[in-house]
Length: 473
Image (cartoon, rainbow, N blue to C red; front, side, top):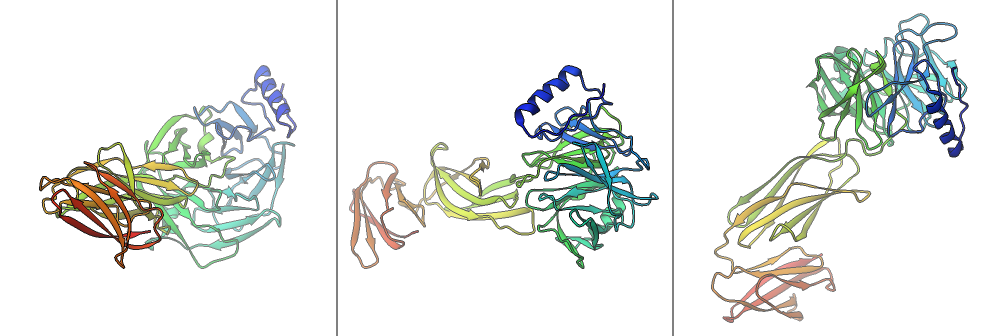
C-alpha cells in the first residue's frame, strides 16, 4: 500500500495524518505529499537519480520518500541543485543536469505528485548548487565554471548574472569554484546566499550580500567566512548544505553518506550516517533564518599599560544582528557595572577586532568582561579577565567617566585617611549635590543632571580635597 496524502492546511487533520502514517508504517518506497511540517527535525536530500528523501536531521535516517526516482518521459540524470519554495510548496531542481541532452530543470509539487519541466537554463556546464529565494520569487545556481544564474519563477525565464566572483580581499572565488568542483548553497531570510565550495581534501564558506542581483552585473564581491583551504573531515567533499532554524548549517557528503552540523564557532559536529546511499548528494530545508552563524567569541585579552590603563581587545565572528558590546567592570567578580558601549562595525569583514581602554585608578584585583547584545535583545558573554593594579600616587578613584546614571567613588587608603563627603559642582562653581561618604566604595546618583561637564570634589578626614572633572552623558 502506497498512501498518497493530499496537502491539508488544517493543523488538526495534519496531526491525524501523521498518526496514520505511523500506524500503517511508511516504507522507504512510499511517497508522502505533506512536507515541511517539522522543520526543526527534518531536512530534504536529493539523490543523483532524482529521489527526494526526508532526512531526520538528528540521526541521518532517511525512512520517508517524498519523490521516488520514477519519472514520466526522460529519466533523471545527475539530478542536483534542489531548493524549496515555501510560498508555493514546491521543490525546484535539475532533474537532468546541464550537459545531459536534454537538460531538464523542473518543479515538483508533493501535494499532487506533479513534476513540471520548466525553461532550460542559461548555465554552460554541470551544476552542483541551487536555492530558492526566501520570498519565493526566484532560484539561483552556480555551475562548475563559477558562473551565477537566476531563474524567475513567475516569468519562467533564466538570466545569466556574472562569471566574476571575488572575495573581500580581491581573491578569485570563481577559480576556487572551478578547482574544488563540489559544494552547495542556501539562502537566508535576509536574501544572502551562503556558498560552500569543496573538493575531497578542502572546503570553504562564502556569503553573498543582499539583495542578490536579478539582472547581469560585471562582478560580485562576496565575504569569505571560512578559508577554502580548510580540511574536510574524512577526505570526502561536501555536496549539500541546509539551514537549521537557529542559523547553524547542516552539511552532507555524498561519497561516504555522512551528515554534519556546522557550529557557530566554525567547528563541525558529526550527526550520523545517512541511511540511504547518495542522500547527501544535495540538501535543502524549509527554513530561512535571519541570524546565520551568530556572534562567536574568537578571543578576548586584557592588558595593563603603566599603572592604571586597562586595554581590552577582542575578536568575534559576527552577523548583522549584532548591535554591539557593553564593557563591564567589577570589584569582586560578582557585581557588575557598565563602563561603556561599543557599537558593532557592520561591514564586509565577518571576523572583526575591537579595542577599548579604561583608566582605572583603583588598587588590587579588577574584573572585566564584555556583554554582547543582538538587535533583538539576545546576549552572550565573553570570559572574565582579572588584572591586579597598584596605583600608589592616586588616593581617590572616581569612575565611570563618562557617566550616565551614577558615579562610583573609592579611596585607595594610601595615606590612612577615610573619605568624608563628596560634592558635585557645575563649571560655574555652583554646588549641585552633596553626599556623606562611607568606608569603601560609594555611589552618587547623577541621573537628574543635564548632559555636560561637571566637577566632583571629594574630601577626606585629613581635610584634603580631591577634584576631578567628569562628563554626564
